[in-house]
Image 1 (cartoon, one colour):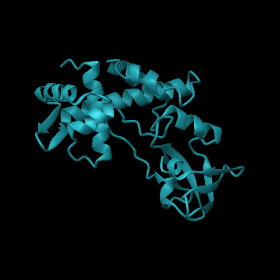
Image 2 (tube, rainbow, N blue to C red):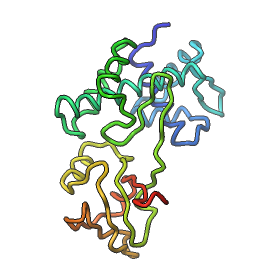
Image 3 (tube, one colour):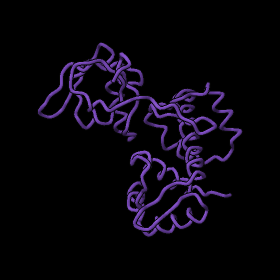
Image 4 (cartoon, rainbow, N blue to C red):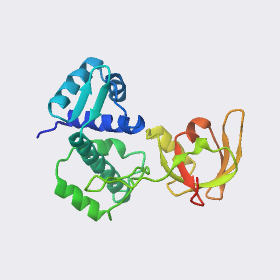
Length: 225
């Protein structure tokens, strides 16, 4: 069955919305906002994907991916995240430079190429932003991470990923010398504006806003959250 690039973009967007919404049905309005598309265009695409048995759709209820749709979404995400690893690890791109390139490469339709790429990279479990990479069977190893903004007392945590993939945000984290695996020591929490005074990798002391803290994923340095 032929799936167009545009259809793949819709499938991936629906999958990510399902993850955010706890796998509940997704409204066409949410899809339109996610893809910056007009509602009428989304309605037309929903019909096409439904005809191909990639989604189920009920008026006033919403959209859900079928098993076929989830498999396609996981395959797209697998390609995207493996290409991000390749671009960062092998071609020395920065983590804030790879998303748009991987968006183009994720549409390459060769399982043999992707499997060989996976093996070449050493079968990584996570991409440069800390997101889990599906294996060839569609399985992912999720980390038990949580936003830094859920903490409000002195403790030591490890930076494991981001919820915000925007270039400017990633560039800002780079100026803080914050990389995956960095140790963040919370020194104080400001009740007034919910900002944090932290030490990164036992050296540079920084102040982090609530907005930034809400997009930084961490796990406890002692293995307990």
